[in-house]
Image (cartoon, rainbow, N blue to C red; front, top):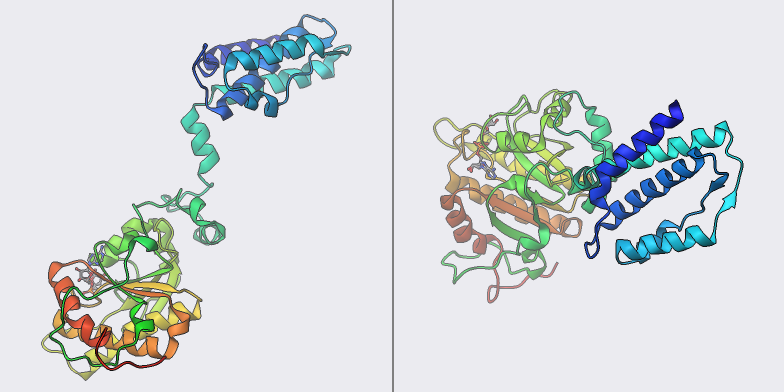
Length: 367
Ligand code: APR
């Protein structure tokens, strides 16, 4: 009975998958070709074994079948091989069970749609959308994947580093240079206008709040893009003090890590305390990155949104802190990206960058 059922199942699935066995001239995706052939061969083996004829055919190897460039050739090759080869064995109960299991599993495989097969084949077994997934397991798996594999699980579009140009001044700067020209450092700076969650780099800095459990602005965008596991990991960090930095995985984001920092809140005016706290944010994010051997980092304009730090003052703190960190640690970093979201911030950075990373005729310094 079991044998009859498996034969029927194989026939049903094979007929369902008949679409994968193209008529003359159609090309069948090679992996489907192979699976359909496997189903065909197993079904054939089932039938012959089922008829009690003591013949189970040795069939052409997938490699041979894959070389054929159209189904007819393949079926011709398999027919000719059917004629030439073949060894007789008395099909006992075990043989029948084995053949029927192969037949059914091959037929089931053949009935899978190509997209399912692609999805099964390509997508690593990671569920970054579910609260209940194990964040440690997911983080470990993501760290072990190469870029191609990781790109299968990004939850947002991505911009590769090679698409983020090194900053070059768009005209003559009116600002007096505050530092000497240092082309080595200038090659490490980018100004990017857009969404920081799309950057496919080692780490993006997050302008978080002390709970580290998400919020609005860039914090909200990062948590939305990363998915629920980011919050799960953040919840284990016991928050973050102003000016401090803490690192987590990035989960569904193209970046490998997120470095969370909490900027100062400015109520009336910026005092020494607020300025030092903002400097600490940039310094501690860079230090956390180099401590973890990360070489490409992007910053949003920390504290200049909800936290009310005047952008024209924040830009000077950001550029000075990054310049001075690079002077001391240039060999540890390949790129620091200032990621601006607002046109006004873009204009501020374009005006101020030449003062902190001068080019050309200003006095040169050696690294
Ligand atoms: N990519 C890059 N920059 C962004 C993005 C984004 N997707 N979204 C917003 N920004 C910019 C804003 O335009 C602003 O210039 O980030 C900068 C920082 O603004 P906020 O996100 O408001 O951060 P901050 O001012 O530091 O306030 C932090 O806001 O979102 C909450 O939870 C957060 O409580 C915390 C507070």
